[in-house]
Amino acid sequence: MSHQDTFNIQVPIREPRWVAVRKEYRLADSHEVAFAEPVRERFLALPEAAGPLRDYWLALAGRDGYPAGISSASRDHKTDFT
Image 1 (cartoon, rainbow, N blue to C red):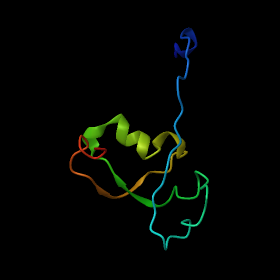
Image 2 (spheres, helix red, strand yellow; image 1 turned 120 degrees about the vertical axis):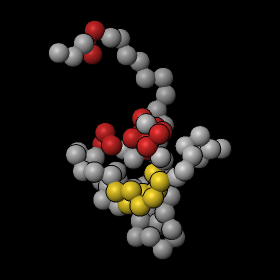
Image 3 (cartoon, one colour; image 1 turned 30 degrees about the vertical axis):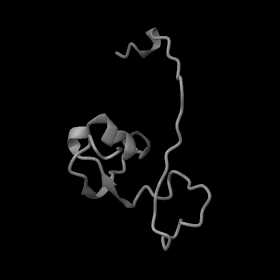
């Protein structure tokens, strides 16, 4: 049984997700990309040690069960964003 309804939840901020692609990529000229468009593409991922952060950037919660395609993983999640 979920107790989620017993909490008062407030979202303090929302951030957009971004996707970086090569200039030759089919979606490169798009101002916005629908979430479902690149869902079957392969991505560079954070290492598994990044845990929930890796899951967030791979958008696991929004894939409707479709697995994330990972072409490669970075070696150190602590320095990837610095």
